[in-house]
Each structure stands twice: as structure tokens, then as C-alpha cells.
Length: 318
Ligand code: BDR
Ligand code: CA
Image 1 (cartoon, rainbow, N blue to C red):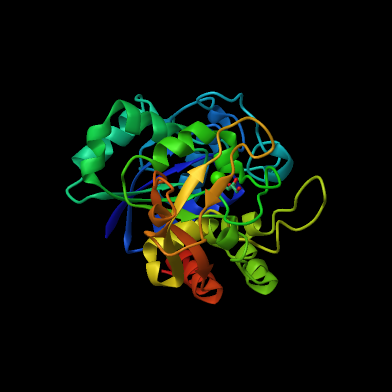
Image 2: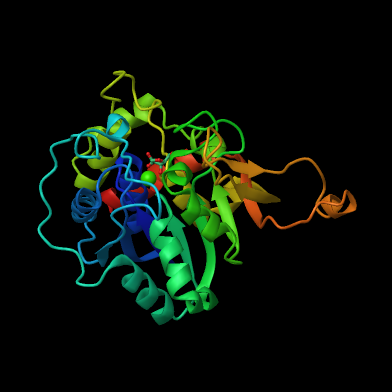
């Protein structure tokens, strides 16, 4: 199985990602690290521990990470994820506490101890990952790839052009992209498309198995502000984990990506250069300084929905 670490801000769809990761036989979830984002970091830790318990995987190490972005103040998304950051489902408090070490230390230790190179899956603002890469650059030798949920080729969600995870900590995202590690950007363009049909969501929600039932309840989470269904059962962050389990479902192009750091309406945008074939920029006298990233441009929606349901329900039935 592929060793993976999820760095998250649980989070309705981060919870869906965790449920999938612990149940997919091709993934070996070795640790989960928490960061401020959708909600404050202590609530993220509680949510993460609870989800792992409900998923029947209470032994996976969980660590608390950054409580704020590198430069920006904390700007949570409780309007999307509910007061507890996870849909206000009234879930029980977790029985255990997080690890004694912080997220950066747990990431370092887990990556360096792994017999095979680790795939990192950040589904949150990239603060922990940036701190890790800056303080312990030696970890890159045992990182296979970073597949992060964040950014957008087209429209943003936090602002007109910026996706929430990158907007929340743009400097951290810029550090990740320039780290020289093979990186896949699972951005809003694909993130928003992978939606589970309502009938499947209902069936999951009625399951007698706690993990599958939780997935169903999370998928039917309604935005408390608008009352609208969280776009019809979107897998959200869980799609990025599907992309690690089954890369053939994702179409990526290797393209230059730059994060806008300047203040103003563009801050936090991922500027993806789709103008030309690779190599042509130099011909036009432009310095090619932006890192190349495998940017997700298309996704096989049906394939990932099937994969998600088979994994989360199948494990429950076993
Ligand atoms: C991202 O922001 C969070 O609300 C979601 O969990 C996802 O990681 C989408 O922009
Ligand atoms: Ca998230």
C-alpha cells in the first residue's frame, strides 16, 4: 500500500477524505496533521480524532499544527462547515488526545521513518507543510509526491479568483510550489465536479455501520447560511485522496503555476499559465521562474464516485 499522510482542517469534506483513506486497501494512512483553516486548530484536532474513531481507526497518530497562517490572521469558514467546523452533526467528543509532538515534528518523524517514500495529501491551508519544508528540507528525499487540494485554474471561492486553502495562507502555498517536490494541484476546477447522487447519499446515511453512516450525513450537510445542499453531496477534499488511490481518473497537465502574493483583489490566486507549450516562454524572453506543477484539468466523476462508495461502504459491509 502507498504510505500517505493527510494534513487537514477537518472540515466536512476533510472528514470524507479521512473516511476514505482509512478504508482504501491501497493506502496506508500513517499520520494525520491538523492546521487552522475551516475552524480553529483545536476544533480541527477534536473533529479529526472523532472521525478516525467513527471510522474504526482510532490508532492513527494525530498532531496539532499551526494555529494561524504565516502572515495572515485566521479566517475561518464556519459559514460553510457549521459552528463546530464539521456540519454540526452532534458527534461525540473524542476519547483520546493528540500526540505529544506538534504537526511538523510528526510529519518529519513519519516521513523519515517510512520504508517507502510518502505521498503527502494536504487538504487545508498549507501552513504546516511550508513550516516543514523550511525547517526540515531533508524530508524531501523521502517524499514521493505532494497532492494538494487547493488553487483554481478558473474561478475562486474565497474571492473571485482565489481558492480558500491558498487564499488563507498564500505565502505557505508559494513555499510548497517552489520546494522542488513533484506536486499535483487538485484545484477547484475538478474539486467541485465530483458529486455523489442524492440516492446514494441517502443510502449511506441510513447505513447501520458508523463510518458509512457518517459519510452519508456529511455528504448531505446543508450550508447553514443559504440552506442549500452542500453542492449535492460533493466529495470535495476526498477527491484528492481518490486521485492518489486511482491516479488514472485524473487528467493533469504540467504547467507553470504562480501564487499571487501582492496585496489586493488578486492575492491568493494561483496563476496557471496555459498559453503555450512548455519551453516557449523563454523564446519570448520571459524568465521561466515559476515552478511546474501537475495541474488537474479534468476528472472522471463517475469513476471517483464509484470508487468512494465502494471503499467506504464496502469496508463497512466486511
Ligand atoms: C477547501 O476549503 C475547505 O473549506 C474545504 O475543506 C477545502 O479544503 C475548498 O476551497
Ligand atoms: Ca479542507
